[in-house]
Image (cartoon, rainbow, N blue to C red; front, side):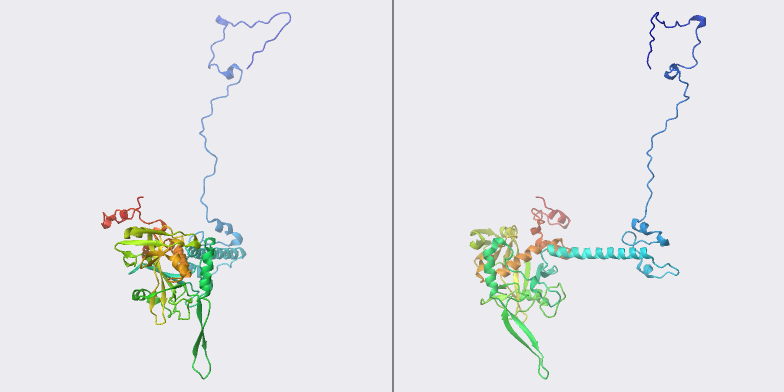
Amino acid sequence: MSLRRDYCTDETAEAPTALVGAFADPAPDHPATIASSLGISNPGPAKPFVPFAPQHPTPQPVGNVVDDAFAGYYGHDMEPTGLFGKKKDKAAAGAKVEGEKKQGFLAKAKAKADAAVRKGVAGAKALAKGATDLASGLARFDFKLYSDTFTAMLAVAKKANGTDLSDKNNYQAFAGDAKYKKLLKTAQAQEAKMTRTESQTKNVKGRESKVISRKIKGRNAACLGFAQVTESDESKAQFGDLIFPPAQAAGIPTLVTLTANDTNGVAGMLPITGLVVEAIDVDALAANKDGTIAINMAEVKDAGVPASQQSLSTDEFEFQFSLCVHGLHVDEEKGLHVGPKILVPSDKMDDVSAYGIDTDDGVESALAHAIKGEKLDLLLLWTSFKLVQGAKGVANMSLDPAQKKAAQELFGSLDGMGTQNSFSEAVEAAEFAELNSTTVA
């Protein structure tokens, strides 16, 4: 609203004088408002207040988007596929319904798509299992985890089936590691002396069949290395049922007998066809004298490893070394022989130069002995090293409860899952079992 002033040249306009007294306008019926002052007609009563409401459609439940996409086309109704909806009853799915319509093009295309998806899911599961085995480092071994009367893992060279072996599953000692170039040359020189037996069955009509054999260069695919061994009745009782023959199924370890023709050229060194991983029994170590164990690690110049010496109590030793690996040799009479114990350092299991070997004079460097090729060779040490690397992941594989517990006993501490501090020495009751296994530091 604005005030307007008119300007005149002769006289000034004066504002009109309001009437008073009897001539004054009577009082208005309604109070003055802005609209009445401006001469605007009465707009009527105010509209009632309407609360704000969002103008969104109410969500409605929808069905299977895949089925809905195909539903109704050419008069074909689609049932749930089982992948996106409820599984169909196999018997009902296979039963022929009288008068049912023949599948059209889209229905057939969808059925093929569903089958491809199901096949893909199954294939993905198989690949996932294969990837788990590969990631665990056990892809080159057939192995069995024992959990009934004793805890141990037995591993042998991987077989495609119960009898066939492949050289592609064999390790080349210290190959692929730039740190051990000099050791690789030594390992290759050791392996160049290895021989194996080649056998052939000769059949001639009118004569009795016979097997002929000869010594040829190269190691047997079942051979995991060479070592000095001693006969073991305990090992025969534990693993004797896996000596070949009879043939075992694929994936089940089979201990193979190798003859005198399978050698590395060093007297007293016999071929190893099985590896046993178990927890260290300190009382059974030859190095254990008066409750203490001397550790004398010789210098290994080719690996840049300095010499070191220390003496530990048995308890201190078990904190530093938790596992051991020993080889198995099967003679021609099916007797089992064991090789020296290779000791695995708990905190340096990824460093093969830190592995020890049990001797009468104490724990000594397994690498120094392997270079000499007297108690064991570099191939056996390297194969044992690789097995332990893979076996560490067994606790994460799909196992039954007993095997899971066995894997935990063997490899739990290597996975960082061991109990660092517990109350077990003070509390033995079963109701405190969970508390005793709790890590507190």
